[in-house]
Length: 243
Image (cartoon, rainbow, N blue to C red; front, side, top):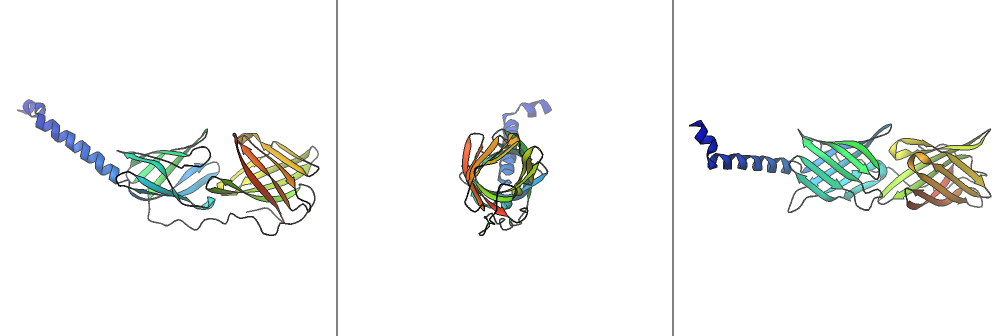
């Protein structure tokens, strides 16, 4: 009797139908609002994600500290417990690959050669207002490169505040770049200033900067290059370290 039941096509169909329905319900459960973070060196980068079901999946992402609001995701896919989506037009082609389980989505965030963990939890909390990512309107005049500087790097739709602290010791100039919104400080490997030309390199992120100081020493206008991508970047002199 039991053998006949298991060999029955009707029993097989019912099991198949149960599996299909379970997968479908799990996929629909991904729709809604999520709050979490990308694990970055020295901390976490807070993110808010909204996923919408329909004829095809869609979604948006907010990264408040980087000034990103309601940014449209692409290639949004929910298949069973697998959730993936991309951020188009951002250098490094950011990609999220996660697994949904018990009200959470956990997985890997990749951007260029970098791979980091991320997590999301269900939440109806609205993202806070983005941080003010603007240069000071009145930079301070000065001489030489030594001192504190602030720049705002436009990386696709994302704005990143970059603080510089340039000092001098027996061997010459040295410095640190603080990626304020990413809570990451990077030591410069090379720093140079001569005849109004300022430059530095950070091997850890394969990046370098070259710029020219203006007449009163209040600003440096130049180009940041990283992993083959270049963007204009202006630094304004500050009275103290940017925060």
